[in-house]
Image (tube, rainbow, N blue to C red):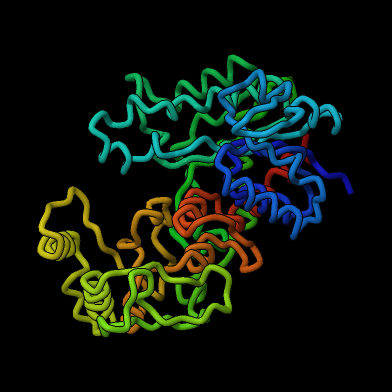
Length: 406
């Protein structure tokens, strides 16, 4: 069976890559990521799950902005040594596709609300240029570029970033859909991910592959026919995490320590609660009970904001608390989890807590054998930034169908 070869850029801990590899139709030539915990996590996954013995070489720990070294190799005190992307691509006799998505914080609507300059000065606005450089150098047949919905409206320089991206790729011989706002916004919950997570999926196609055809029609078919074939039934939060061991709060002050506020079993990797103070635990319990009893006094933004202001003594531009509904998919899992879990409160009031890293991973559709390496904060962060593997699996199958038709 033919396997299509790809490079994964901005790989993170490997959610997008893992979904493509799970299809069995793809082979990863090299991955690029600059954060060490994510690099170590991805290397371990590739070795454990896919028996990739040279994962240490194929997962390149490096800054994509240093393009010359990225391509030709480096020997660096911070990033170690590597032969570079050129070496790996030449070893594989070229590639068929490139996947990945630049960090999304600069495009997110929430990030723009919080930042006094609306993220206009954030260097991450233009990391797509380095993605484009890699595409331009290796000329894959197609690419998959993933990002947040905010990329469709972000205007860091006064012009829509999506229009800049489209024109730059076109200038380099690649076509993307003119209609991304209507067909490119994909809801992960429709593809077996227990989470309402909308992401823009951009399929780019090398223009010379369809000289006598309308490429836009081909691209539209990817979104309207190929990808929807792989939709799956909706999965709720309780479906995803309800079987995990119960975690019990420690309410007695004398039995709490500076790092331990819950009793729990350690049988499931990373099913470990973060420390919460008693004030927060009481709020979590109250908000979860409010939903369990059906009173629903605190389910609107105004009421929840008031709870926060009374508890903390300061105002907030956004409401800070949210209880996950047991009978629905989760709200979007985000990297902010590494700071606090206030918007990801467990639905069971008896547990009075936010979700664990393993619960966050399950809501992102990572399997329990996916082992994360790093501190609790870095694990929350990499999980929140990842592409859900089940969504990536569906995208991978649709991309394979598209490539088969070339």
